[in-house]
Amino acid sequence: MIQLSYLDYSAVEGKSRLHRLSPKSKMVGMLLVLFAIVTVKSVLGLFLLYLVLLALFFISRIPMKIFSLTLYPLVFAFLFIFISGFQILFILLIFLKVLCGSTGIVLLLATTPYPSIFRLLGKFLPSLFVTALFLTYRSVFILLNVLEETQHALHLRGGFQWRHPWRSVTNIANAFGHLIIKGIESSEKMYESMVLRGFKNKIHYRGE
Amino acid sequence: MSHIHLPDGILPVWLWISGYVAAILVGTILLRFVKKEDLPRRLPLLGMMSAAMVLGASVEIIPIAYHVNLTVISGILLGPSLIFLATFVVNVILALFGHGGITVIGLNTLILSIEGILGYLLFRLFWKGLKRLAPAVFLATFLSLLASTLSMIGVVGLGTSHYEELIHQEHDRGIIGFEFGKEKEEHQEKGTAAKEVNLERFIAIVLPLGFIGWVLEGIITVLMIRYIRRLRPDLLRLEKEVL
Image (tube, rainbow over all chains, first blue to last red; front, side, top):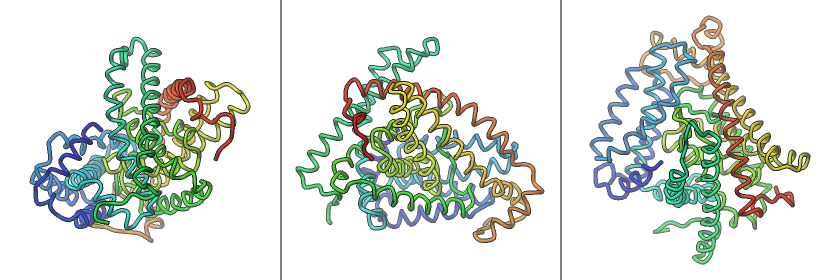
């Protein structure tokens, strides 16, 4: 989740052709990738799609730190190895579907600023949902700052140690409790400042 | 453990579309219970709790992707209607980072909201009965996580015939094979023949791993609620019932 700031940085500061493409075209592209993931049922087809997405990733000069985000979902795909009874082709198929999906979505986020994505979503989804989505995204950044401070405090109090499980669990719980209290206080301040700026249940974007 | 970390294209189309339809229906019904004048005031809190859930899901406690969901505590703080919207938002954001597919957002919302809504209701019930915070929170969290994990297994189980088809399709089809309406009947025929898909093995792995997770999250939620009660007891609204 720490790579979130890199994603944002890449989306806003990137100058590649993919960055300059309109958000609408990129969303349509992502929908086509999703359609392919759902319909293509051969390892070769998915492998070709993955190669194309990888090529786009590197051509767009997206920071390499973000690449690990595309691999993270593989952790969960491992459970499906046990469902399949260790069928190699099935496992490959699942892994490629995971990689195509995550690479496609990271590609979209790393080349399109999130207000543009939410603005586009606002044309199809209820404004309440898009406002909630926007506030959540904003809150993630606020909480990330608090989390960073909390992680230092947690580390100073011993962090997570297998030798002291109870103390470790208490530390983690207190850290999350602190995170939530701080977050709620920030959300109250954020709401007050939003009301002062004329917030009435809907976020308006520049140019509207 | 109750979140379906499934990529796109694994579950049958009829299943994930049903998930979206059911999620929209449930969401529409639940949001009618929220007072309109309350909504703008509570939206930032909803955003913050959703962000906490997103962060909770990304902070590994034990390095096998074990993370806290924070859905029950969010349910207790937000109430059953807003927690549904919060889980929907959380699943969209998690899907945007590849943490679960985009097509399973509807199903994941239903499963996670079972956790949040049940957590809220059970907490109120146990609090009324026991009048002790720690056991009420622990039992509510443990039972809600158990219920959502069982529903997750149910959803994965519903797609069994589809996994069998995926295993067999390599030598049957070309690159693209899109099915929609005929899916169910064809799968039932193939399902009897194929024995590769082993759901029992999946359950045997998920339930014991899940049990550790339920206990761990139960303890963490108890400690967090105690911490919140010490600093901001108003957030728990233990004196009055609010939907």
